[in-house]
Length: 245
Image 1 (tube, rainbow, N blue to C red):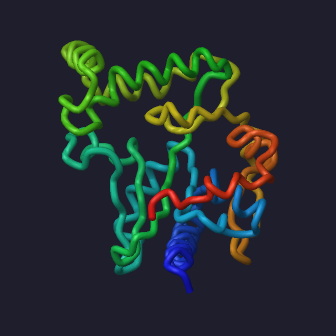
Image 2: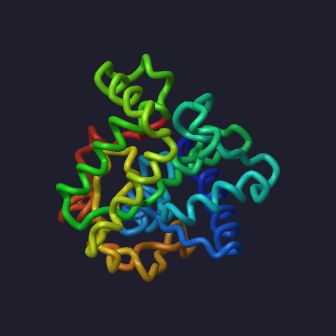
């Protein structure tokens, strides 16, 4: 067995644990990104992939992060993304993203929260820019690690409204729109994928490593949004590389 395959099997074990926890607590998660693509194109892991990606709606994500520390079996660990020393991250770890590890083994299962956003991409990007400039600096390694303009702007606004309060207001901006879509976490501008509700719900099932796991309702349309219409065609050999190992 190769080292990569050993990592994949460890991640599969973690995924099975997560699936049981989510089922017990009636939390709706689904396979996404390379994991969903692997299920569709290969019936399991993409041969060179070394992580598992999952999505869950923001409100259920909060519940998940609250119950995980006690629900995970011995040897499993939840890691908060971003700067763990950030006061905001300590208060609200569910707003940054989490990774699950097993016995410190170099394998990762990442959860990405899905936020509601405007149907208009323009308004959705405006929402994300506000988050990027006014809130995200407080979640990164101390503000010296943020570009000066973002740092100054965030500090200035924080004199008038607490970052935690502003963050929630930005998350709730979508309520101003009658037509809403779903998008990846506002903190990730490079993953600005937008989905209609019908593309995700009701969740379906897809086979991954001979086990059925939750998937978006419209797997094809979902993958086209992320990878384009040729997602079933593997990339050139030179691009078939693991991300973490």
